[in-house]
Image 1 (cartoon, one colour):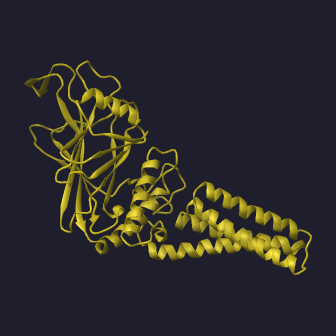
Image 2 (cartoon, rainbow, N blue to C red):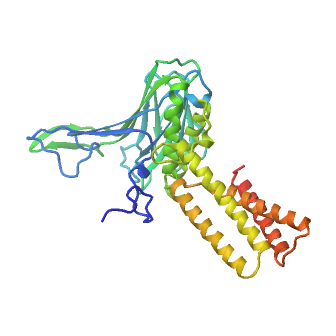
Length: 400
């Protein structure tokens, strides 16, 4: 039975569209090297088989000239933690970052919410004679680019670590330049001495401490003008905000993706756009979606105001029928708004503040004009209280 609706969102928690499962703007390619005398083992992966090759390539553009945020290059990623039990000759895994031709001295920030930076720095002191890693906070490290940077990965069990790397390029970059960064996870291949075999033929003995590449990704950074970048970046932000709504707060990706979306929004602003107007849309057609969602939000606010005014001024059967009708309309508009716009909590609070506030103002004017009803004053106080309460919650959540 096909899912309903076919393009989501789906009420079942375990059912997501493919787009909702994406965590970055990137291309992933797995290549198979077919050679009949040496078949690919069952359940093989690119990290353990020389017959499979995987390439993760991200293309993130940088503007020049432009604001700092316009040449800040964000990219999310996922890595395995080092094994919790290491042999006497084994080291923790490392991220080996080859900065390639990236301008020396560019500032790189690594955010890993599942890792304590103190643990990472302790490993770095133990493993390296010197390092350039700087602690920003409990989950964030910084370093300057240039050459190769090694970052030890603390041990752990269970889910992979997720994170984001951001690179701030200097103002000296110019249109037409292309920079490349390659990140590899290096891990232990063996513990002690081992004999590698292939079929019935034995290979050479591998010494202790032998390391191999577990996974890799590459960031390619072409430099373009702001005018060329703005529209694609707005479309990307619209898509990412749609995906963001599908990630629950208890998901390991939540803080990383939230940080990623904020940086993309800052890029849109730096490129000359207005990120606040770019609403969530699975198709990226955010301008039409923005207008539709604004209309739905305003309609919801007006219906809230009408509900307050109806309760405060009407009575008897007329009030009952009117309140039921307005409540039904409000429920329908709210459901449509949530389904097609996925408004943030701050947008809900804005509609509530506007609706309850308008209702309170109208009721106050009626009191001033001498129009009375048994429940008018009580409804006025309740509406004003709701507006003030929603405003306070909005301040706490930094909506304003």
